[in-house]
Length: 115
Length: 111
Image (cartoon, rainbow over all chains, first blue to last red; front, side, top):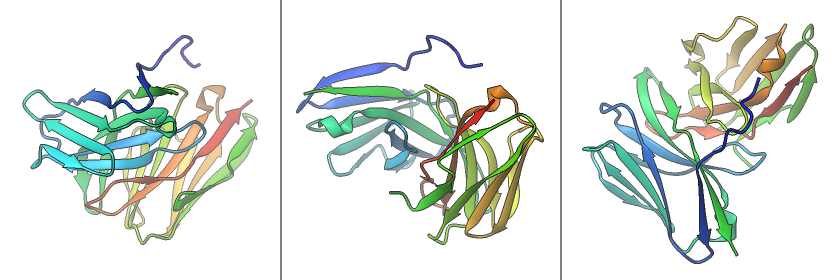
């Protein structure tokens, strides 16, 4: 059955402030990383990705930083809005074949935005 | 709305039932995936299809049987499930290189 009392790490941020969500990954050979946002009742939604030959990538209001030395990934959200409230997952590419690959998800962080 | 469509949105089935989950995408992606997600946990990979052939089976019990009839469709056939199989079942598709695109899932309850 399901685990009772299992809680996701939670980050509470005031509306308008910047948010930083961190993720440690496991495989030093991983060459592709993705951040997903998952709202209640929905599937994971792609936010931004980064390849291992980069250490920073920017999107609209979001920035992903990759530190391969310590196997750490972070997602920065500028000017956080109530609509950003969701669970955020980092994911790493673990293996690949012809035309597909294995994507493994981190544990997730719940972001709550305080109006 | 997502570009990956899953049906049904909700499904309740008994342990002796046979049912199927369906997934459709029209983005021309040649890789399709089934993930299982329990509450407050990350999605876990079940199956990967590449060019309509099963390429990865993550040691999933045989009561789950995937099928890829064509490049746009992916099914998951369910038979003799257990209550612990209750979860959100997510379908995704991708092209390589590129991220996985997920549907909104089927919420399955096994009674």
